[in-house]
Figure (cartoon, rainbow, N blue to C red):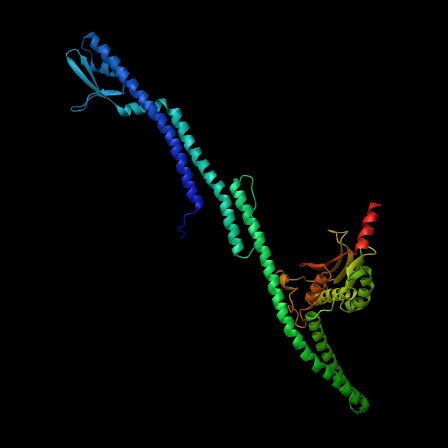
Amino acid sequence: MNNKLSIETLMKWIFMALAISMVMLTLGARLHQSYTEKLSETIRNGAQVKKSVESKKLRQQVEIIQGRLGPSWRQALPGEKTVLTIRNGDEKLRFVINPPAVVASIAEDERYLLLVGLLGLISAVEIAVFISYLLTRPIRRLAWGFREIARGRHVVVPLYDMMPYEFHELTDSFNEMASQLEKWKEVQRQLSRMDRLAALGEMLSGLSHEIRNPLASMRIQIDLLRSEVESIGKHDGGGEALEQIDILGNELDRLNGVVTQLLAFVRPSQIAISPTPLDDVLPWCASMFRSQAAKKGIELVIEKRADGIMVMADREMLRQMLMNLILNAIQAFSSVASERSKKIVVTIGLDALEPHEKALLSVSDNGPGIAPEIQHRVFDPFFTTRKEGTGLGLSIVQRIADGMNGTLLMDSSEEGTIFRVSLPLCRTDANTDDRSSEA
């Protein structure tokens, strides 16, 4: 059981107590004034009746005198202190004020005031509850924001016009703090990633060197062995041996390719940025991958949405980046049913957000997409969901994009995945576009 007193409950009780106190004080003051006036009126009436009875010097019936005094007076009991004494002939009548009758008379006279006071009390309580809710709502919202940040989520607390000024200041400060914290978390992730990559690069550099030397020796020995077997001839059993040697050679080449990719990740080639026509990658892309995609039942579509696009990039690095993206898209169809239409679309054009500053190169597929829980890891080195993959392709693509002052974005869902590479336009090309638009 939670025994903690919330600030909302505390403020409700405080405001309700203040509201009830104010209403009761106002109503009490008015009723006290009415009681004082009623008491004075009762005493004046008693004095008038006394004067009238005693002036006649005749004995009257007690009931008549009591009727003239009214219900606010009653005869005094034995031993009770007398307030009014009337000489009725040779008899003395003693009277005292009857408080219940006075109060009843006040209640009758002030019934509308009591009704208004009751309604005011109810309204005051409702207003107190509303004010406490209005003041504690921003505090509850900030408490929710702190809980979400403690869980590692980035939140922005909204502002409302009905907030007091101090809560506006407090909420603005909280949102600024949350934004700065998110930036620091991103910086920490980048620093952590750089530290891991530095340690990984140092390890892989030595490891790749140690592996590549034996691979080179093995390649030489396999070539010599092939020459010896070919000299024996197929009729002496050399044909089967050649097949086995080819298998060894292919596996050796595959292993050498993995080592080469590791070295390319650890020690990437120097990027030489120069004005490069983006259109040149399309014919190369079609000749390199259309037949390979067709063998797997994939339609490769090339789209050009603008002509003569010149970007500041490295031609060879641009091709390597495009090659990795297309191979990644082809491999994405490995889990797709055969009856599903498979398509990869390579598109070049101007960036819709910055058409005078950026060009856009995109590779999209209608494959199964990437699961949301692993999308943040696809650019991490050696992260892969395929048994035969190395997990370096997308990491190399990101490194190349960063080296050419570009940006790499990914959008994935069950309908497919699209990678967008934004590259800076050549300045002369941007100036030409500006002049043509002005004309």
